[in-house]
Length: 54
Image (cartoon, rainbow, N blue to C red; front, top):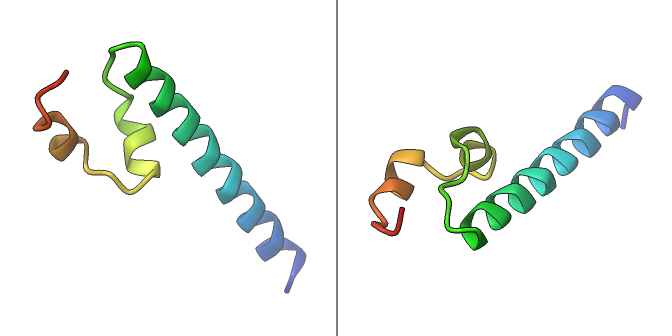
């Protein structure tokens, strides 16, 4: 595994982890998570809007 590929994978992990934490905090606070965080997690923001809670 090349160094570039390894660092890319590590960066992707931290991006996903950060987005998950941010989305979790937003939902716990009764707010809608940022679209960017939802997309990073593979969630369609429009589908999330249809949940009806926010």
